[in-house]
Image 1 (cartoon, rainbow, N blue to C red):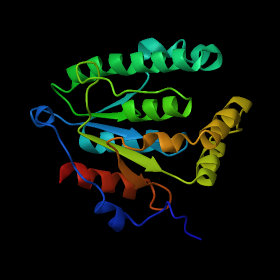
Image 2: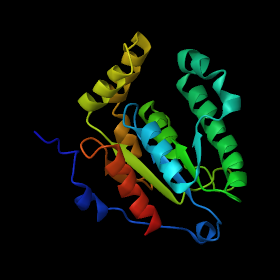
Image 3: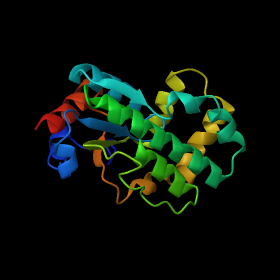
Length: 207
């Protein structure tokens, strides 16, 4: 039975409303983010899209922040965890701004995903000003049913206790609800396959 989240690509195409600020239109190259929960296909889609567009693939948190990520996840309070990821987004923004002067960028999770997880943790999140966080030209939210996400995670190997706890947190705290009212284009990524999803996004970006 088809999941209600798995809509036809043709139907989704009409829902991709492309908006740009005047600042964005002056950029030499495009900044595209792929957002979503664990197992939604962010990394696979963003890597394939970057390759097709001749863009730099980027992932958050940026390299200087990764060494303490596990400690933050395990021991930090919700507010401290939010500040850690916000700082990572601010740092990533500065790095991406420089890269955009000579190359497009496709980012595996950015501000929208940070906001969604922080909201799920009970943090009242305000969108940072553009002076701190660069605004993407396009942000795509990959929507995948929970059972499909879990299958994908399991296909990578044995699901660890930490991965299982994180997955249950995403479901129980309704992390997907945190994406509401954000500037993201919702795109089902469960039945069409990687190639079709990337083609769909590329068509929207190049239209």
